[in-house]
Length: 591
Image 1 (cartoon, rainbow, N blue to C red):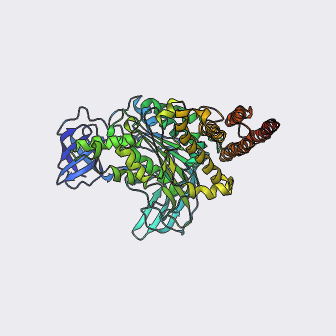
Image 2 (tube, helix red, strand yellow):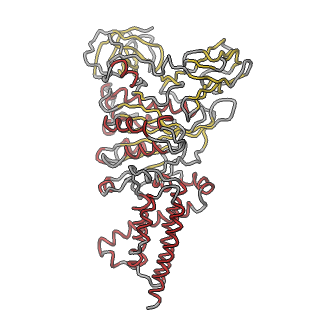
Image 3 (cartoon, rainbow, N blue to C red):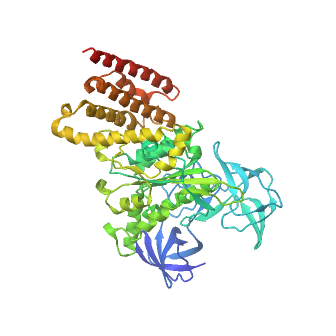
């Protein structure tokens, strides 16, 4: 075990002498309080260490002890429903031990060593297994079955013995594996280095949409299971609420939410709200399939740097079981700021706007861990990890380095717009600046499960919104009354799509979640309204009279109609629309 002494302290970055034999990224214990740190630079016997806790009061000469292992997370039953800090310390267990304020140097295991889990073996003595094979199952929560896997860094072997069905702690031996190197006792607990992506057999093209119940995301700018997306926007534009909505309603099996450098009150809202939310798929509490990682802005900056990797490793672990996982990172800008601060203390050459020169490669390393994969193991299992990263560009400037480097990597861009937020249009996604490169990939799914007309209607709606943007420039010069009736009708139809389809109330019991079938039915009704009204205009009906039809108010209220009632309501609106338009056509044909 390597032992050295502190020679220099610069905030969370310390230098230690006498560290010969230490390794890069090795975890060390620093000072009398044995604070957790990680070696980030080595030169001869001198090590530069970033400490994951406050270093106030520390002095040169203090002891530094190596652990011989990199920063790793504990993986096993008990992760779900937990709230961790950036380096996977369980906050509730720490509170029980130290009170409301986390004391420095506190050492609490990430997974309970006393809790017992009901293990059901799926292998038997004499079976041949390889890395990634399922040894047994544990019902971790009511909605998630935890599969105990052969660790991915183990060679194949033969099961020498396996535990009988029963209750065991995470450290109890549940199987003994005979390998070419000898015998290995396997428990339900695994450890994995956070900076190393977990291996898989093959990466596949993502083709199934990650349905979130948010109309602008699902219909206009879809994200896939295994896809990557960025949601940049200025302060107050609704990044966090959008992330919360995605975390609440996305149809992933497991959600990992990383609050990276966010304000304490926003993280408190998540911690208080999530346990009371009902999962629309199962009817059970949402926390049954959620892991929360809380590293708020007043927590040590070095732990913020690690929190993103901690979340990615936990997410990959559930992906390897064959689950669809969604990781929310809020926000990667705060993570980049932590990198910048540590880079400055290391006296590295700064890049653009002071960020380290390796900013782009770090972002790429993170997002590259997303994907739909064939997992390790002898049976064919498929899992996916979708990543959604919020970005907080200063002043909403999308040309700054973090936003630009993120956009080079991610395939979905949900651009938040301060002017839309000021007009109380939420989610304030700018439909003219946003894009999704997965639209063609998810089209077969929509055609198969919802309707073959999905792409056609989506393209028509987007064309209307673009036409509206062009017409608004003319309207500002000459006024709406100077436009021909057909173009005034485009403005009315585009307004309907903007206000009655794209706008969605996250705090309304019904409108907070909209199923794909209802989304398509609403969009189809609005496109049909435009087509029928356009026909009426061609028969001499003024656009002004069409805009005053009472059925327009009913279309506007459609988003507040519950899922069980909307089909009947749409049929009723269709009939009323036909009647009102026929009455107008008859009225003007008599003149």
